[in-house]
Image (cartoon, rainbow, N blue to C red; front, side, top):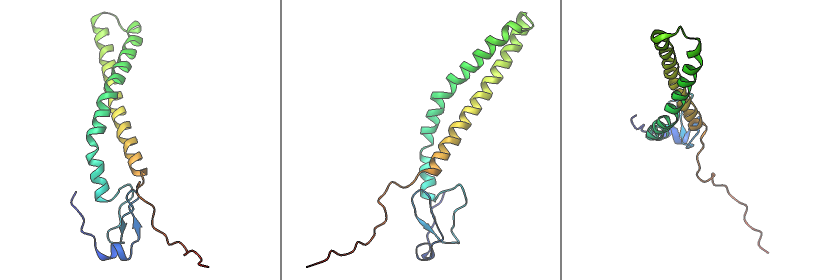
Length: 135
């Protein structure tokens, strides 16, 4: 993502704000729904290694558990012999791969939803207070 050079209208006549960092945008530079400004999207891309690590931690055990359970459940009703076990093993492995894909998608989807809901943790906008009464 390239950096966007902000125009004067972005600060003088804003029509929207980035939902995360509250930087203002004019009508010409308005953001599409489901996106944040370039700086926030760069933060999202910088956090990709963390999401990848979460996938590597959680997805393989889930796949092994699902594949093993399915294989254990289907083995007694298999055709018998090496061919039946091979078929059941293929079905269990296919299910495990599908579970991996679903778990990875779930991690990405939930991380993106949390990112889009995230708000700036900075200071609130300044406001003028009435001057104290002097006696």
